[in-house]
Amino acid sequence: MAKKRRLAEVEWEVMDGVWRFDRQVTVRDVVNHLYPNGEKAYTTVQTIMNILAEKGVLDREKIGPVNVYKPAVSRKDVAQAETRTLVSRMFEGSFGALATYLVDSGELSKQELDGLRALIEEREKAKEGGPT
Image 1: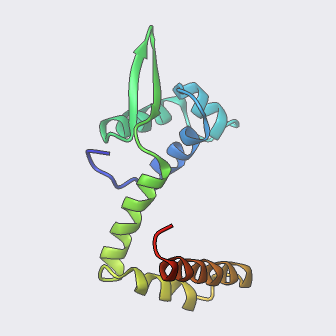
Image 2 (image 1 turned 90 degrees about the vertical axis):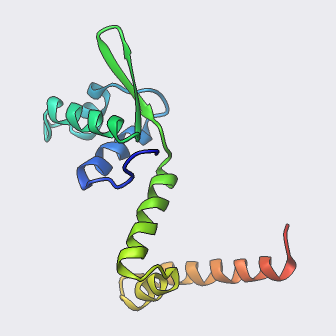
Image 3 (image 1 turned 180 degrees about the vertical axis):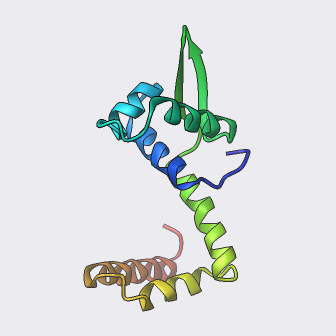
């Protein structure tokens, strides 16, 4: 994503729809998948997808009369960039402060906390054993 990396909420929504396809998509594909009951107009989704192409998040190609789109970046890459921005703005660049906030927030279930605990233990064991 060479250009602006931050996505508005509706852009995330549309990208979520695009990432779910395992092929190039048209605006109609995305509209039918995300808004089967007409919650958003075709032209609205088209505008959003064109903005995403301008931001470098989608690649756009004209095939005959139709534009087709495919992700230019992965969901993981966008999520990493967004997370870095969040951590920089709200937690003074500290991922540890973000982790502390999440644990202290009371929003994580026991299962999620257990999963985090297991992940931390796994990472610590991997560091003790050196590169694998």
